[in-house]
Picture 1 (tube, rainbow, N blue to C red):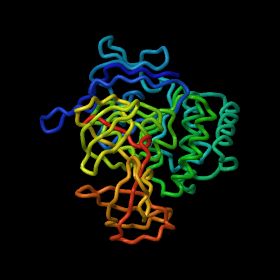
Picture 2: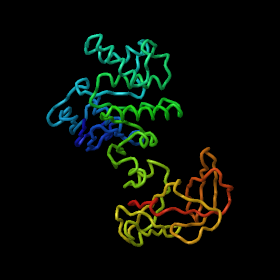
Picture 3: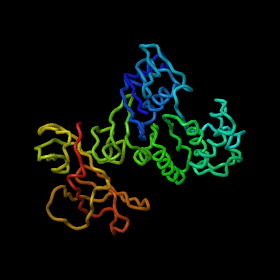
Picture 4: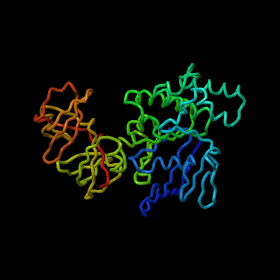
Length: 362
């Protein structure tokens, strides 16, 4: 089920000042995809989700879910949350501690007064889907964090919603459980083939789960794209920096070379992708991810994007080292193989492929 949002406005007021939580947001969320709203705290992503659900009333604009107009300020239309055909998984799970797993999951069906046998059948089916067979009689408080998350998912799915929405549902889990649950959630949602809208500030979650990502900032959509597009060749400096660790180098375009451009910077000339067609003479920002930098302790010969610098810091993080290399007055972050025999203070050479760095407008 497709969701279409047009000119959505939501204002808050604090100490006599107006705060634009949503600033004329236009957005189409495709049917049967996992679509993530990603951004820093306070960017408006949860407000947008709550407006879609119907838990908040916008101050302007329209929201359509499928062919149904559920909100319109101009046409004075408001469809209440329970009639929008949506499922919701909250950050806190909102599981009732005095109920068993079965009763928690069955609650949406019981409120609709479905026959008991039909409720029992639907609950068993959805608990099997989220791998909680045999947990029906357990008290909700006796479950682990990951199991409680699955109960919340089952409760959202049991009424067979057209769309399911998630408000940072994994933020209360520890790192390892979060990683495992993320994989399960991706599998569940892919098998269901329904529209899922997921809110998070965690870039790893967004990249791992999503078919498409909308990056938000200050109440607006900055950029929409696939995880690979957003990560490898984003269109905006804010997005490139927010979605992952990035070295951003300022300079000026000298000339174009097909899909690439020669870029003059403080560390020398760099060749990078120029998908935005920044013209010669214009200032730009070059983005290179730390993991795409190759390192050598001896001179690697002439070539594009080869530079000599000094290794200033070296931090072991398990699967790799994180190093900072100074080239002139510029400090670059790089990822280094843990088997490398290097120490802080060493002279090293770094290089990177022109296809693995890209130019952005300043």
